Length: 226
Ligand code: DC
Image 1 (cartoon, rainbow, N blue to C red):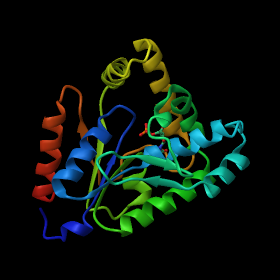
Image 2: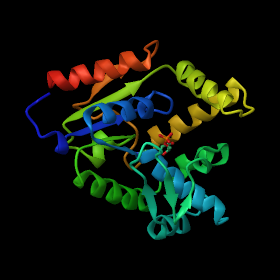
Image 3: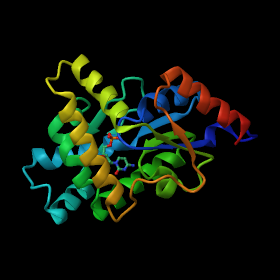
C-alpha cells in the first residue's frame, strides 16, 4: 500500500450493472477497514420514493424535488440497511419496478446534484470504497485508486439471473438480459456523468473470474500502488 493514511484512502469502483462491483467493493472495504458506500442504492431509494409517491418518473421537475426533500441514509453496519425518510427500504429498492425506473431517475441533473453532494460528504468522514457509475470521473476525481469493472452482457445477466432465482424471483434470463442492456444504454448515453472509465482508471475484465480472484487482484494492485 502506498504510504497513505488508511483512514483517508479513497477507492472508486465503477462499471455497468452486474460487473461484480458491490460484491467486490464490500469485501475490499472490510479487508482495508474502510467504509463501503453503494451509491446505486441512493439512486434506487429516490426511484422507490418516486414510485411510492405516484409521481410519473418522466416528470423531471417533481422527481428532482423528491431527491432534494428525501432523507437517504445508508447504514455502515454489515446489515447495510438503506433508510428512506425513516423507512427501511433495503429489500424494496431491489424490486424489478425500481430497477426499471432507476436509470431514468438517475439521468436527471437535479437528482445527481443532490446525491453527489451526499456522497462527497460521506467521503469526508474517512476512508471509503465507493461503487457506482461516475465515482472515478466525477464524484471522487482525486480517488487514490480507480477501478472500472467490465464483463460481457451475457455473463453479467447470468450472474444477476442466478441471484434473482436464488431470491425466489420468477424471471427469465432473456428478461434480465434485456433490462440490463436497456439500463446500460441509458447509463452510458445520458448527458450528465455518463458511465465511462476515468482516464486514470484500471480496467478489469471480470468475465470468468471468481470473486476471490477479483478481490485478490484489486488488493494486489492497490498494494503495488499502481
Ligand atoms: O448499481 P445499481 O445497479 O444499484 O445502480 C442503480 C442505477 O443507478 C443504475 O442504473 C445507474 C444509477 N447510478 C448512477 O447513475 N450513478 C451512480 N454513481 C450509481 C448508480
